Amino acid sequence: MPCKKAANQFKVPVIDKAASNLVSWQICKWDKVRLMRKASRLAKIPEKYDGKTFRDYRVSEDNRRAVGLAQQYIRDKPPKGLFFFGNYGTGKTFLAALIAKAFISAGKSVIFGDMPELLDELRRTFDSKDISEAELLGQYCECDLLIMDDVGAGQLTAWKVGTTYKIINRRYNANKPTIVTSNLDFDGLKSQLKVKDNDYDGGRIVSRLRDKDNYIPVFFGVDDRRSAQ
Image (cartoon, rainbow, N blue to C red; front, side, top):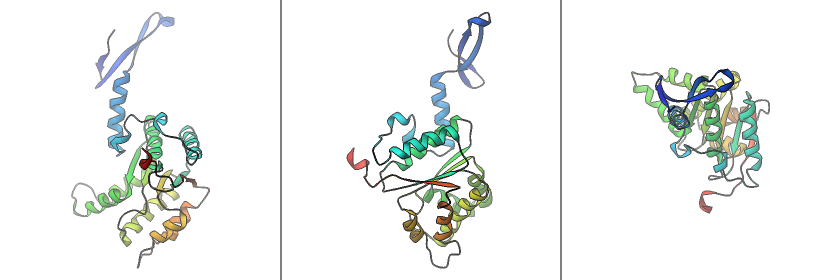
């Protein structure tokens, strides 16, 4: 029997001969791909990672530990977060995207936030009648997994650093896993997030990322993989 359209999804027949040829229906493989892509768009995962798996991830001595931790993280789904740091082009965002897609496949709510864009989106709510800053901030703080990609990048202001702190702190206190990526190590990030006249300085943010009960630090090395392609 061919696939059939049911409940807005295409399904393929599965015949159980042990149960008198009883037919059940499962989602077709190609439709799973379509649904995954749709879910990835809703989660804001960059399109370049559509269809990518761990088989596409180039493993090196620098990132071998990171790949093993990511695979274990997917299996266990612990409440801990991850702090991915290392030079640009070392595969931090790619690995975070693979984890995000695995959580989506497991039925978890995920938001993949490029930090400069995430903060700009929050600021646009100031002039929006559709959603308030508090409502959007709540989405970031309450989803099952939040990716905060490229923390410390862009032109920083007291408001941006303060908002970054609020997100990290609320998820920290709620024991919700967050994956933070940065080109900077702890000391570099602390310095980068130090903004004049800001109560929520980089020290408070880095203090939470350093908490081994809540975050696992993972170093990706310094070799830019993009330049080698």
